[in-house]
Image 1 (tube, rainbow, N blue to C red):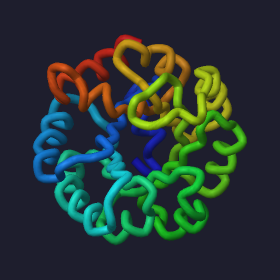
Image 2 (cartoon, one colour):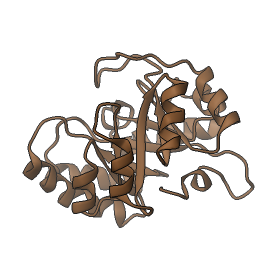
Image 3 (cartoon, helix red, strand yellow):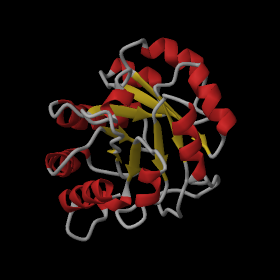
Length: 222
């Protein structure tokens, strides 16, 4: 997903093609979740999986990475770690996603090197997004676009931001925050290269595979 992220977000004809970006639930049993992740990834197109566990020490993270990274990578899906560029490198992840308070972004870029992905949260800010591009981010993430139960929404993003960014810059953008199959259409049409989702897949009433299929169908119909 790194340097080729923009190319991956476009179909063979050169027309924009938005893709799904899965974020794990905030708490999980790695052994049990590995099977759930496999079913989700086998159900349809997914560009990346981000491991985002907000509780737990390094050993907890390492166990989760060891269980889930091979599931994604064996299916040619990028496996990214939230917050920790150092641990991402140590454990063979494909990259890291950092928030605005997750350390020195330029140092993370250097640590990850040219072959691993660096994604940076930019909330609803054009300025932060341009700064992320300057330090070498492979993608910028905007949001939240809709209310979400995953985390408290401190920053709201306007859909027009996606259109502005996609017209002005080649750097891929990820839309995040309360995105579902029912509401994602405007985000896709406004230029989002990736849609990051949690509940829309893992909390789908018919299971995660159905959630992936519903999201991909909605993206295709947008």
